[in-house]
View 1 (cartoon, rainbow, N blue to C red):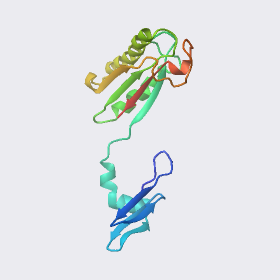
View 2: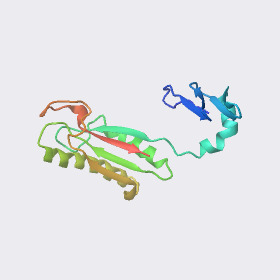
View 3: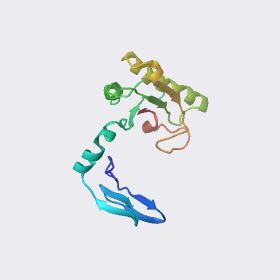
View 4: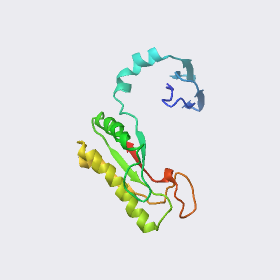
Length: 171
């Protein structure tokens, strides 16, 4: 059974049996295995819920990513990012067993060593803010990437605000 993608993107699945194949390329397309090979059929949301509802409900929540931005050369949030921490906390708090990865980044202004330290400090600011709100410390990992994973490619010594960020992956 091919379920619709949560993002709305197209998806496809090939079902093979004894050298015979059938392509499922529409949401709710299904395949039944038969002596003559896989047989394609059309299903719908109601049938999927009836047959697979319990299994679907048991799946873990999909990962969610947040991006918070920082003031140049500092480990302080921009005014626009400061209120977003509430949404991050709410997402984490709503998961029974959260797993949070916080990755700090910098722009290309400054030395590699200084940017490594600053990116780690930014990640730690977020980690500490989450812990202060009750997230267990063992559930939040913070790392710094310095200027190694630029969101916007720039030359050295370019102050690009979109590169001064922390990415938070909540699983």
